[in-house]
Image (cartoon, rainbow, N blue to C red; front, side):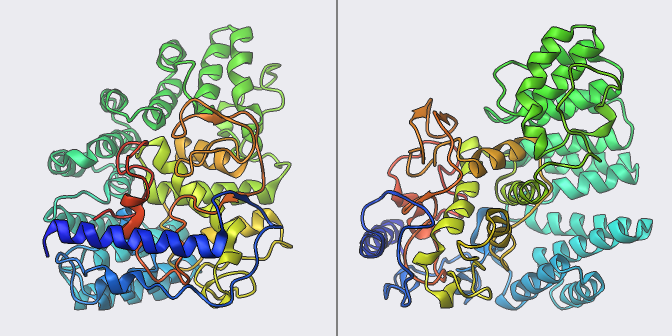
Length: 491
């Protein structure tokens, strides 16, 4: 089918979805727990019946991935992967999530034997062995895990993309296999789309291996870091502090960086340098944030009058359940949009928030309130808010997860507390937008509420469709950079 034909179908689909949305929700607006009425029958529009199956996927894959995270940019299948292996992948990842590690290792071992050219099969075994290593600390499991990720990335590179630089670099660093790190980076650095993350992960691997060269690569990652992210800055600042060089941290951390942990690191450096009043100002940006994301214990300065009120690892947090939910949201944002723009990361968070508050617009059979086995796993409005977020974040096969970063921690906190605008609806739950809707803030915060047509919130009944079909059409411009305000695979 010609590109123009596909675009036309997507436009028709967008219109149908918006019409369906208007029938269900009425005009765009802020909705909270008291708004709306449970929809028992999903809208009859079936976008999949209108959208053509992509030519770059195996038969049946387009339909299979419609309602799970394999339709997202971060986990999109390769052209050679059939439905069978993708089904095994989702099953195995859910077993890992439930703690059934040995069963997952067995499942993925069989998947690799049956589908030796599948990236997801090898990656799944890599994740399973990685989890078993974390439980047992067996070096062999770590070595085998890295081997599987390397094999998976070799398969992925054939289709023009690097996927697993994080676990590969971390694993090789822990193994102190610098030669392996160098060899991997020499290949992965040629993929421009992934260059920032590959460079940052290479630096982190070198740091784990104790290589002084890590600083050079951290600085290169800082130079190419996307605007308003600060993960490379944070990891370089940690490296410098741990190397006894607080003087070099202060000029590195700019005052305008909107990642509280980075400002905390600057405060530590300033206090070491005897500049307590300035340290107090930097710490203030992190003090409340630490109630959800405590600082590493190694940066506690005993007897410091300036660190009062800051929580550190090992401290009893004042709102443990809430902190746990926000941390889980950060892992989801990292899994879906690590290294992406602030707007994209917020869109992931806002998608979770929208499901938390507006699940009653989806029928119970599809995951709305009253059906914990539904696709979204939504809890009712009578449940604690932290539990409701956690349930959406952990619903089976709905979102990818990865290790949180300082930037994703900041984005998760902003969305949870409602202090930033939704990058799709381009509005705040409470107050007005200061700055842009991608990386700006709201004049006041709001715990509750979401927008009826927020990020990836496409009313079409059960979530058995591809939001990507209309995601690129929903806004005619892309205000947030990258793939705009959408973390789904755009076609």
